[in-house]
Structure formats: C-alpha cells, structure tokens
Length: 631
Image (cartoon, rainbow, N blue to C red; front, top):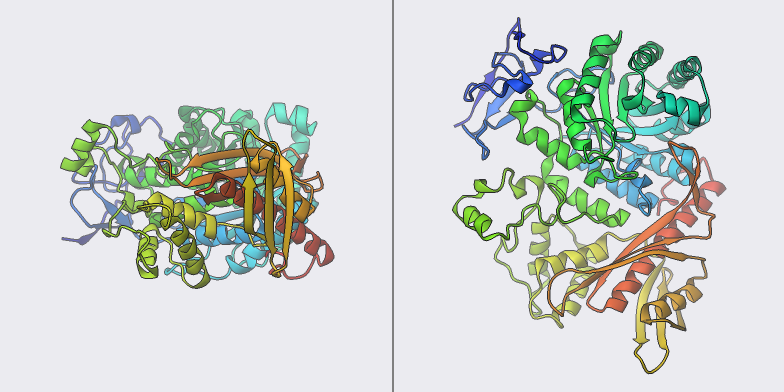
C-alpha cells in the first residue's frame, strides 16, 4: 500500500524545551507512527515539513517509518528550495588526492568524476588547478565533459568546483579550469585562526578580512556567479572575528560559506554549537548556504558533519572512503547512509545520492588511489556485512534485522552466490559476465576478453574460483592506468644456492618488445631492476605490501606499491603552499607472488609515465584541448 502525504503548518511550534532554538523547526519531519523522539534533540512532533512524502511501507527494518522525499531541488547557488535537502560536496579528487601515494592520472580523475556524477553528488571539487599544469588540465577536462553531459537517468549534472587560495593567480587558474562547465564554482579560502594568521600567514586580522573580500569580489568580476569561501581553521578561530569575516565575504558576493574543522579538533557538541552560533550571529547568513568540512584527526569527522547538518548546515563536504590528508575526511558513505538510516532523528534531512552506486565508487577510488579500505571500515569495509560469530549467524538466519540496520543491496553490494552460479574452468564468457553484473561491472568487448583470459588462467590452477578471486582479477584489469608498458613474459630463479635472477619481457603500447635480465637480493628485486633497465626512468620504491585474497595455499596475491620519481614531479600543496613531491601507486594480482609484484610495479610506472606525458603535453600546448593529455 502506498500513498502520498503532504505535511505542512503555517505556524510551526517551537517548544520551550528545545535545547537549540537556532535550528528551524520547519526542518523537522513529523512521523505520525512514532512516539516522540528523544527530547535530547528537541524533536517534538508537529506538522512542519512541506515536502511530499511517499510512505512505501509502514515500517522500515529498523522500526522507523521509511520515507522517500521528492526529487533533487532546482540548483540555485545561494538557496535550496527545500529546507530538508542537504547538498553533497565531494572533494575526493582534491582533498582526497592529497593523501600520500594517492596521485591519480588525468584519465583516472575523469573516470572517477563520471562515477561521482552517477552517484549523484551535487558538487565535485575536481582539484586545485594552481598546483600544477596537469591538475589544471584535469579539472578543465572534467568541467568540459562531466560538467556538461549527464550520465544518470535523471539528467543530473553536477557543479564542477576548483579550489583557489585567496590570490588572483590561483583564482584565475581555478576559473580557467571550471568556466567550461554548465554550473561552475570557485572555492577560495584563507586562514582565520590566530595561530594560522600569526605563524603561517603573518598577517593581521584587518589584512585577512581585506584579502578575503577582495578575492571573492575578484572571482565575481571574472563572471563566476557561484563562489564558496572557507575561513581555514574555523574551529579554532575567534567567534566574533569569524562572524565578521563571514559577513564581509557575503557582502562581497560569496554564495556558500564553508566552516572547516581543518585539524579535526572539535567535538560534535562543539561543532553543532559553532554552526548554530554562526546562524544566529552572522548578518546575511540567511542569504547563503552553510557548509561543513570536517577532518578526521580524532575520528570524529562523520559525527561532526552530522552535528553540523543537524544545526542547520545544508552542504556537507566529504570524500569517498573518507580519504584525505593525515587521518582523512568525513566519509561520504557514512554521512549519506547515516542521514538515510536515522532520518527521523535528523529532522527529515535527505540527499540526492543514489546509494546503489556507493560500492562501485568505493572500489574505483581504492584501486585508482592505491588506498585500500580497512576491513572494519563502516559501510564499505569487507567485514561491514560479515557475520562470523555463532550468535550473530544464528540471529541473521532467523531475521536479518537482528544484526543489520541497513541492507547491503541498498549500497550496491551483492551477497556471494546470489545467482547460484559457481565458476570453474569449464565456465564460459556468459557465466562470467553474469557474475560480473552481480558485482556491478557491466563490461563488454576487449575488457571482458581480458578478464576472461585471466579468469581461465586462474581456473586451470584452482579447483573453485571464489567471488573474491574474480573481484581481484577485475581490479587488476579494469582499474589500471593507460598502458604504456605491459608485462609480456617473466622468468625468475631464487634460493639458497645462488644469486636471484629475473628475465623480463615488456611490451610497449606500440607493440615493441624489450627484454632485460638482472640479479638482485631476491626475485622481486631482480625483476624490478630488469624493468628499470628497460623503462630507463628513475624510480624509487617507497612502499611495498602484499596480501592474499582468500585463504588457502592457492590464493591469489594482490600487491600494492608506491614509487617516487627523481624529484621533478612536483605540485603545490593547497593549504601550506609548499612544493610536494608526487608519488604514484600501483596494484597487481596473480597467483604467483613475483608476477603479482611485477604487475603492481608496472602499474605504478605507467601512472608516473602518464603523468610525465600529461605535464609535457600541457607545457607544449597550455591552452589546447585536454583529451590527448588526459590519456
């Protein structure tokens, strides 16, 4: 049974027991089937939200009413027509890429941006264009393609945003990169805490306010109608000064004011009060969108983000898998699912995210950045829906709700053997493709042929192929940089009787084959030295890690490496302004640990060589189109 119910009230009731009168009660969604929620949040039942609510089932799995709110509101830079809607600002490609070893090529960034658009994020912060010519080129590519062409069925096109420090050079680069998008945004920032102004900027409060206003006005003068301003380290800034800065940038033309907890210092109660105080004490704040940007240094990024949204922020800045500098950022999947799961206690807040694409986005970002998700990570970790305890298994067999508050299918995760297909050496392409569709991979043509070939190689050696084996092979084939070199053949010898040696044949993208032989302290070292002699590009191994995909002596091994160049691969750090040495990650999978290691090393080298090629192309043709350099 389904029916539409419109709840509204011209005079919302504001209870005297409400602990936070700055939170508009018009944001609260009344649930007539529930008893009054906890008074801790002041959610006294009343008819308030004017959104149309579709009651698809009387009760959800958690015992709360399940509501599906109306579609994404029209995008207006400084206003959201529906007060219950929360914009999702994804900064995976900017803040997330600042993680050591997380460098992505232009092509990989474009692929991730497409996935973020499919996921339904409202704003994609595509990069920091002033950091390097390659980053400007990548952001421009994303603006041209993802910022103009919808990839989802609803026709949604995200805002494309570029980050800029408060100086004309940065803002010029950001605008040049994003102006090609249908909905471009420039995001500029300057520090406002005493410790930052004194020790980093060496500027007075008056100078900071002047610079902030001038640069917001300058961005407007270029033709940008959507400008976000961030007072860096707002969590540790003097409140009265913070209100003053925000008032002035709003006058200058800012449409969104972002409140960053830059060092992850605040507690949820503090951050909730910070947002509420800004709403209550900043003149003109009703004419802009308040945003949150919470770092995870104390493990509180998601909690702080939710507290900020509850207090009135209507944009949340997040990253896929929570990646980012130091301990990372608020996790997109955690924030979105928490809002969806506890909607009744969050005042009916909702997002435009299509949660069924979360798992694919998580896998893509993990593989392209080389930052694999820890098994116990909320929502997308390998153990998030695993139940090993006997008590848990018994409960799950009797009723899934006993230990699962969300359904894995809601985030695009398929349970093992859902189709009943068990793959082996006699399985054909159709069976493999059916299994891949279960995992969310719709591939055909050469990609399917490559995966099928690798599958057959493993099937000849393993009696039964597990889902984990298949996913490892998919990652090793699909989530790889553009091929500059590929592994042809490999022979290695090792042991206690002599030197370890390796002979490697690499095949170039034009089909040319090169062979080299080398000795080393072990077979992997020997193989890497042989590859270096072929590629002839200086590379230093920074990190090396190997894990088994499944249990058993015949398990597939996955390897992750991080390499660095000769120091010529530099970019500028967005917050500190210091030069940053780029590093490049690579992953590989095979039953032979030496082959797995070599695949990972070649993957990292391809990424580094691709970056070098893109930088060279940009320098030779700085104003040209970007499609070639992004390859």
